[in-house]
Length: 224
View 1: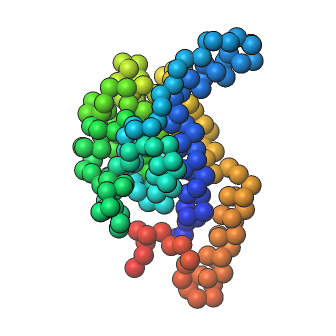
View 2 (view 1 turned 90 degrees about the vertical axis):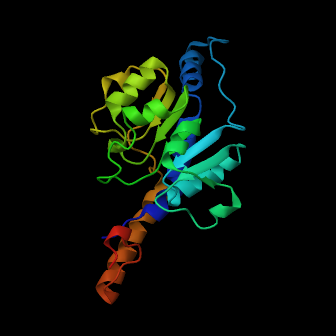
């Protein structure tokens, strides 16, 4: 089995940063502009100096870190194992509990497995800072949506940006009705260039499998 994750990393990273921007400010601006109502937008939050916590420092997490650095964010991450080069201190490797407790923005980039399903649920949300921002462009089931809706309602989570959902294409009504949530229909990789490159990589993998009995981008868990 192969994947094309390396092709989509950059687009996933861009979507992550788009949806992590202050949601209330975005929605207020979108609502006010067509009606020519000026002065109704609410102030956003400057990302400079804020702590971005990345859960899953693979290809996408790495691309997110590169782009977030340009905004002056402090970057920390948790991964199954520390990423080579992290000893430099940027990004900073921390334990999962510390990541949850100290991040202003939490960005999820983990595959779905028995260990990552509902990795963010009520106990983890309760550990987070008040007013945290959560972004998920990985898999919907890594978040307990019911718990997320409750945390948004209480103000524990200030806003959320989601490109994936627990029961796609069904979306929790509490997310649809919350003005502090940005929802995208799983379109992070939807650009002509990315889709074309993904198709070309799929063909390259097929050719390599037929000619040499191996894959160019084999799924890591299935490597022998």
